[in-house]
Length: 278
Image 1 (cartoon, rainbow, N blue to C red):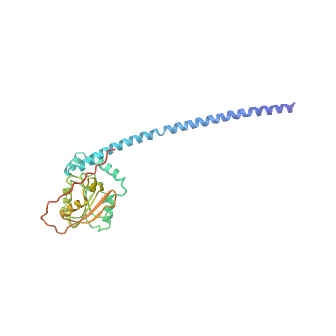
Image 2: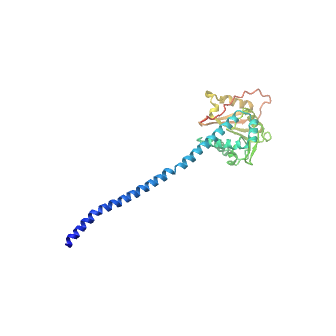
Image 3: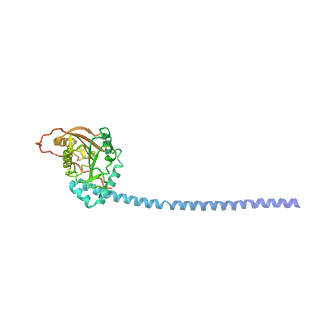
């Protein structure tokens, strides 16, 4: 009897055991699914914030880009004096412009100012430089030369705010004059004339400009006509670099002697560099 009863118990236990196991599995399965649900719900909830913040960032970027394009177009279509007064009356727009400018430059594979920095480092550090339209004064911060930095407004003690056609330097007082993407006003020839005034004989004039502005096939100026006008002012063209796809580099030297009787110079109109609205 005891032996039979023990068998019955074993059978009973063996029959019950799978049910218990199923219950345990069900509990585990439910627990796991609930855990997955909660994990999924938390995961699906979390991207909402980045999407929202990403949207706001895009909107800010668009607004900032819109302001930059507006200011940029203004600078290309007014005189240097008008631009100088414009920023004096609206100082916050100057910072807004340069923020947008830096963002645009970040997409360029090479910065023209770095090419000019390299050129200066290959020459004597005793050369005195005038940087017309210096922006963040990167040139002066990366060379040993004495650099006079000029721009339409100044947020830096080392930068002098002025109209580029009338800078506070004596005649024949500098060795190098630099225009790095800064021939922006409708009266740009007066900037180059000012550079000629402050340069010493044999002094260097370095110009870096957006390549599209010198593409005659798309409304740009003929670089030969541009170089000819500068030569008639009293310079000798020494080198042209068109190798970069974004900008060109033009190098001139002021003539030792130049006739006081100058014929009328025909300056080509430079195409405004206006960014497309997105």
